[in-house]
Image (cartoon, rainbow, N blue to C red; front, side, top):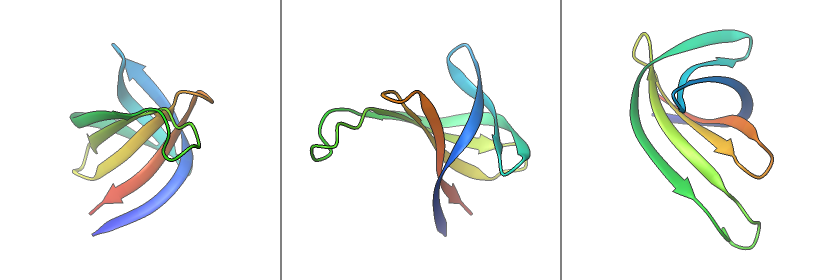
Length: 81
């Protein structure tokens, strides 16, 4: 099951990759990076430039995080359970 949130989060990076993030006043340590992809250009005409990261947090939950490169903000888009 997938839950969509699209809420802003604080992300810590280590060597360019997310290593931890804070969502709703709780800290999550990244145990593994499962995937990475980018969306650039017109999705359709809103000028999105996002770098997505699918990560597994300690404890086994899987999250989709993205970095909005235009506004330099991180978001948690989806939680997979």
